[in-house]
Length: 151
Image 1 (cartoon, rainbow, N blue to C red):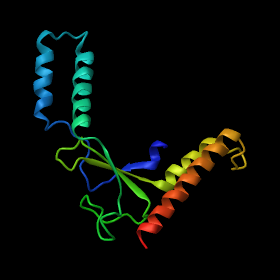
Image 2 (cartoon, helix red, strand yellow; image 1 turned 90 degrees about the vertical axis):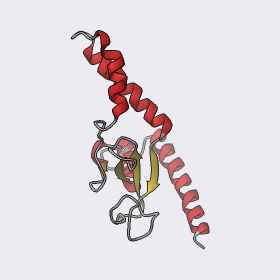
Image 3 (spheres, helix red, strand yellow; image 1 turned 90 degrees about the horizontal axis):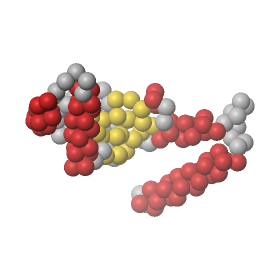
């Protein structure tokens, strides 16, 4: 995905580690023998340990924003206009709701095509054609599964 294809869902909190008191406890343990030379390493080590621990206990979640219905997105906002918009919930917010980013499935497909397309906008590279075929085949299977479930 290109960075501009995924965006923060504005009605959810931004990433915020400040309320995490255990971050301070972990940092205090490591800061006993602090010097200017190792400050960056200590901060990086603490942040890494904490984020790894949080992700182990509460992994990121991926869902379709419309799965709660046409009225809401499950995160306090309206359902997305594009039914194929996917939400990625990261457990890095100031509350249990986390921080949510959205991406369009169409944007992900466009990204794959853009990776392999030539100057005329066609995918002619054999590797790119195979990647596109595999994704298209899998998406057709998943579409059939959704159709069967909704019948």
